[in-house]
Length: 55
Ligand SMILES: [Zn+2]
Image 1 (cartoon, helix red, strand yellow):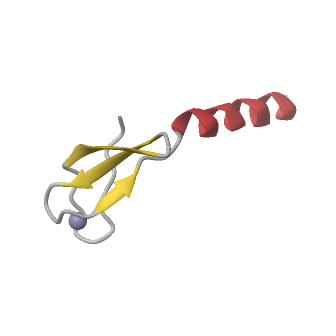
Image 2 (tube, rainbow, N blue to C red):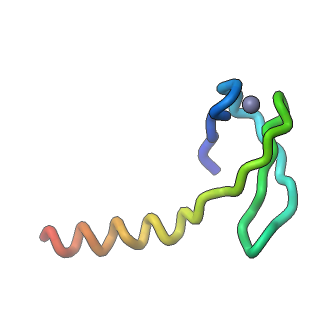
């Protein structure tokens, strides 16, 4: 998993914090702010389609 910088404190240390609506949730250790992981599989699929259309 790529490290995600906290928008509040800039730290990247996270812990898994269960799932909600099928998405992995994380919490920054430093400040305790919760965030939901992005759906990386959908993003990568869109990039592949775009690449093929360009070629
Ligand atoms: Zn933070």
